[in-house]
Image 1 (cartoon, rainbow, N blue to C red):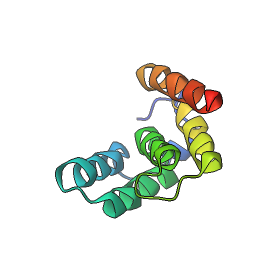
Image 2 (tube, one colour):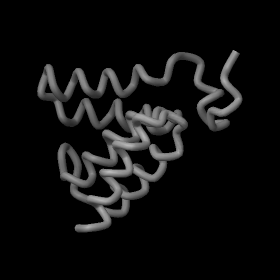
Image 3 (cartoon, rainbow, N blue to C red):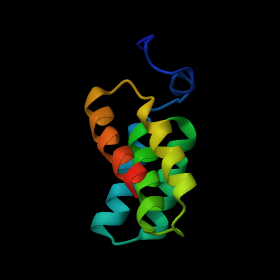
Length: 102
């Protein structure tokens, strides 16, 4: 049974959505495959994986594997910030403040 506090879009995912961010991290950090990591972060973001949205947003901020795009950066960080994970929310708060300062 899913916790009712989770956003509606996360309830439709048939598997643990965190796997997308994990695969993206593995491709980026272990195999140095930026394009592959972006693909998995995008898939995760599409199904409501807050960590994947966060990593994809950071990628757009830094131009890592994608062309830098401040609009996508900010939008994805805001999307990830809607997740109820309080630890992630604190990290996102710092990232959003950095984006707003730039």
